[in-house]
Amino acid sequence: MNTTTHSGKVALVTGGNRGIGLETGRQLAELGFTVLIGVRNLAKGEAAARELGGNVEAIALDVAAPDAAARAAAEVERRFGRLDVLVNNAAIHYDPSARALKPDWTMIREAFETNVFGAWRVAVAFAPLLSASGHGRLVNVSSEGGSLASMGAGAPAYSTTKATLNALTRILSAELRGAGVLVNAVCPGWVATDMGGPGGRPLAQGAAGVVWAATLPDDGPTGGFFRDGRKLPW
Image (cartoon, rainbow, N blue to C red; front, side, top):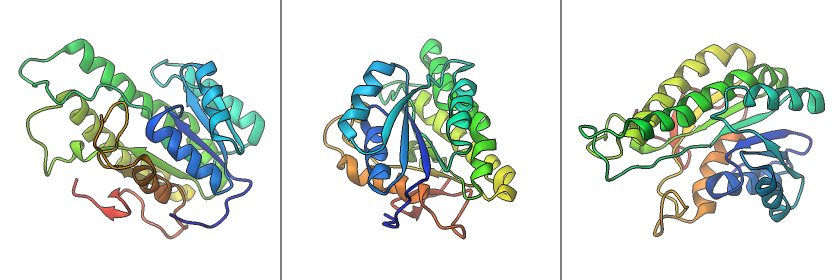
């Protein structure tokens, strides 16, 4: 992790009230960021923010709601005038026992609405504020389950959404390169969370790779796919 102080910088983490999102917020706050955790339930988000301490607060942001990202971006612009780091972390429906030939279309559509369209909407809404930073960082929390190089049977909803998120990462990195915004996808690994289940690596270890991408120097990589700071195959 980059241990340089980032006092005065502003970071937003979607799905920030638990799991990887919460731990990412904690680590960014420890580095000096003002951290906004985007949450569907503001009361739960405010409780999580109090748990983290530091300069952390909750902001209403249900990424699956069509207008929520624009409203949140307007609030951040009014209060701060820019955003230095955006972590697209919110995701649903890890479905390892499912099969593509027996699709649950309702679950698949819900997964795309949050994991792809939600992340896309948030990126679009906050791109001007990331550009205004001059040193913006956009991190899409992905998964090696979305890697075409190793993809196989199982988790069709989750894997296809993460593969699509990886493609979006490449496109956004090219479109935002001229504004000094670095855009990368990060796999935190199998982490012991509500979604990942027990037995995974510690939360702090998984989140550290996300924070690494969020605090890259200006000459750092963009348009890449990483775990623990090391490249993964697409």
